[in-house]
Length: 178
Ligand SMILES: [Zn+2]
Image: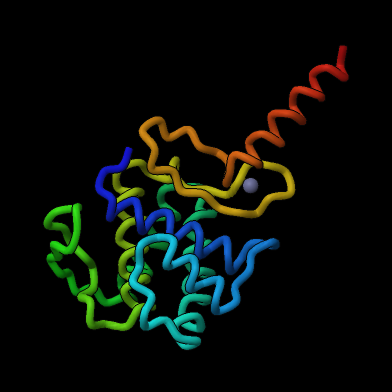
């Protein structure tokens, strides 16, 4: 379910940043992080090494939200972050989305716009669905996180590759038993 394009943008961006910075196979060079933001619709013209330096600790904080196993834990973490990240809501009408809310105005620095957007979008997802839509990949040996804004909401893996690998392993295990 793409509730709004903007909402989905921040959710996917949050998971992608967490995976780039904190997962074993992630790449968190300045260029890689610039790519994560560009891939999720952020305007990256003012991306600098300082932006990347501000995004890395943010990724580590967001990871704890994805790892929260109870709703109470996720709410505590999100409320702590919401108290720390100043919000300056701003109405924007810059593309096909129609009039929509940004959580920081365009003139504030990019890392802050990213923090405000990802935090509000994750908070909205948890308000709508609890912690069922966020988590760590269920595939063995994978430490990447996922966020699920699909209609069905049954996602448990970071990627199709992990889902397929797990299904093949389960199939082989069943056939070994015969
Ligand atoms: Zn995975």
